[in-house]
Image 1 (cartoon, rainbow, N blue to C red):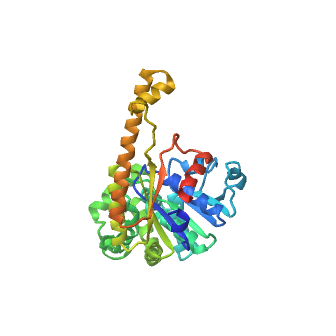
Image 2 (image 1 turned 45 degrees about the vertical axis):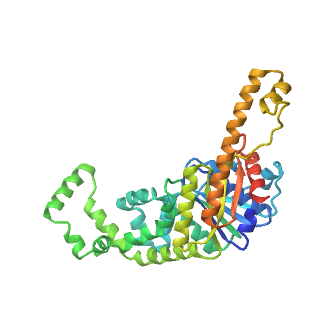
Image 3 (image 1 turned 90 degrees about the vertical axis):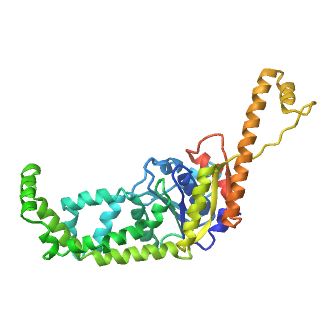
Length: 369
């Protein structure tokens, strides 16, 4: 099974999984492989380490798509028949773009963007990067300029944060507390009683601006945009469940990443999200070894090296490696049984970390072979 088969007729590929399993590298390799096959591909990441830019040989990425030059890949033996574009998502900039889209007029837009409360709120919500990643994905998908969009999901200890992000936004917007506050002349403003106003007046003298006024202005301006955000969240959810979308779970071969992959797959099925397959990174494969005259590897190595002490160390190291290979095989067999599918792609453990196009080309071979 190769990635190209898993993504046939798909327009969105979401690489999901817990942090530290190689999602960024896998996303870049998938995007490269599909572009090599003639597709126009956009790869999006929100990885703060900027490893995707390094992998693609780019000095930096921004919140706008940037085309990767074909000659960068031809030097590594990869010929791009299509186009590869990449971008580094900026969550706050994406939030600002949403405000510009949903604001009913220029005056409301400017009031919100320049409001001190909004600036603090948008910066705080930018910390929950999952939803902003999906917003940008949705925006690019709606524009229809790409054959395939590959999303490298935010680094997270809980991969389910990504699936639950639209629901969390809807719960916030539809929540009773916010709906009360969004009534500029109703109960919301009565919550600010005399004691509160006195405290806010003192705060104004300390910080130099009227906090209550800023809160009122923000809530009044935002109240006309709730419907737009609700509709947007609903359509983002629909995209995640669309048959043209494919979730690829990325994990490692050790016990804990395997457990997380099995759990995440179960949640995908429960949420009726389109599961594509699993990519297991850094897999140790069993290695064959010719025994010596006495049937042991150590004697064969000693004969070849002429050093019994060194041969003993080499033999012990080889035994440790074989133990890792056996562990990986058992874990992957369990993963395959739990998922009741053969859609498991293995990427071997490489001698060096992937941090450039040469390493990306090596990963690409195993994903698309």
